[in-house]
Length: 516
Image 1 (cartoon, rainbow, N blue to C red):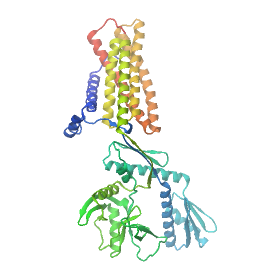
Image 2 (cartoon, rainbow, N blue to C red):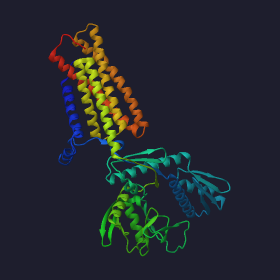
Image 3 (cartoon, rainbow, N blue to C red):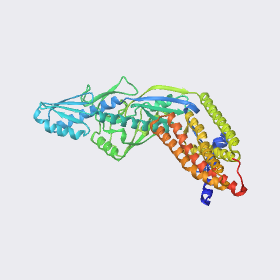
Image 4 (tube, rainbow, N blue to C red):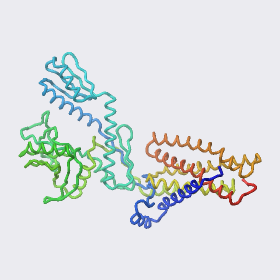
C-alpha cells in the first residue's frame, strides 16, 4: 500500500491541479470572470456553479396540463375518421362521441364484421366491442389512457423547455409533478409574466380551407373567430390541409406591410401544402393558431417552395414571440398556471451567506478536531479535505449543475463523510502500532485493512444517494447530486491524496516512531 506507481502520482497531482483550475472561477470578482468568459477559449475553465432558485432568487411556476381536452380531441378525430372510412365502404351508420371512446350504430347489423374490421385498422390501441344488433363500442383502456397522459406531460415538458431556453433564461428547472403538472423554476427571473406568455399558448398552428358554402357549423366544419377582431368569424373545414408539426423553422422578418413571420415546411409538409394549394386556386384558406384565425388569404397560385409567411398586424415583439413558439413546437395540451411564487434576491443571498457560514464553521471545527486528535496526520487529512471541497466545486462547475440550499447541506454532510475515511485509516494504524509493528508496517497494514471498510461505507451511502435522486424531486435531487459528487471525491481524496502525502513524508523523514 505504501508503494505508489509513478502514473498514480502523476494522475493525482494532475487531477488536483485541474480541480483547482476549474474551481477558481467561482471566487473571481465579476469583472475578471466576465473578461475571462469573453476572451478565453471555451475549453478553458471559465464556468461557475449555477445557483438555484432558493439561492439566486427568481420565479416558481406550477402549470397544469389539460389532458382531458387532448383525449376529447382524439375521440373526435376517431369519430370523424371512422365515419369517413365507413362511408367509403358503403356502411351506413350513426356515430356519437362518448367519454373515452365512440359508439357506432349500424343501420344494417349485417355490416357488423366489415365495420369492426375497418375500425380495428383506424386505431389498433382501441378496444372494440360489437353486439348482434349492430351497436359497436370503441374505447381506450385505462392503461392506454394513462400512457397517453404520460406522453402528453413528457411532450409538454420538452416543448416548455425549448420555449424557455429560446427566451434566454438560463439554468431553468423543468420537471413533472404528479400526473398532470409541471414545475418550472426560473432563477434570476423576477417578473415571470413574459415567460408565462411564452409558455401558456399551445401554439397549435394549422392551415384549413374556408368553407364558403356553409352558413353554420356541421360535423365536418367549425366556426373560428378572427384573432384581430373576435366579432368576425369564418367557417373552416375541421380537417387541416397541413398541421404545424410539419414546420421546420420560423423566423421574424419584414415586408412592405411590416413585421411578418416566415416559415418552412419539411418535405412531407411541402408536398401536402403544394398539393392543397394547387387543387384550391382562387379559394381562401385560413391560417389558424390556437383556434383563432390569424389571416385568411386567397390562394392565387400553387405554393410549392416549401415556405411561406404569416402577416397579421404584428409588432416586432409579437413577430419574435410567434416565431419562437412555432420553432419550439406546439404544446400537446393547453397549460394553465395554478401556482406562482417569486423569491427575492435578498432571501437568496441570505441563504447563500448562511450556507457559506455553515460550511466554514463545519470545516474549521473538523480542522481543529483532526489536528488535535492526529497531529501531523490530522494536518494531512485537513489538506485533503480542503482539496475535496475544491473538487466538489470544480465538478459542479464542469457539469453546470444547479446548486440549491439542500445541495449545500449535502456538501456540509460530505465534510463529515470525508474525514470519516481518514479516521478509519488512522485508528487502524493506531491498532497496528499498539500490536508492536514498525511505523512502515503499521501504516501499510492500516491502509490495507481500512480500504475495504472505506469502500463499503461510501458505496452504501452512494446507493442511498442514487435512490434519492431516482425517486426524489426538486430539492431532494439537489441534495443527492451534491452528496454523490462528494462521495466520489472523498474516495479519491482518502485513498490517493492523503496517502500520497503520507508516503512522501515517510520517504523523506523515515521516522523510527510515530506519535499518532
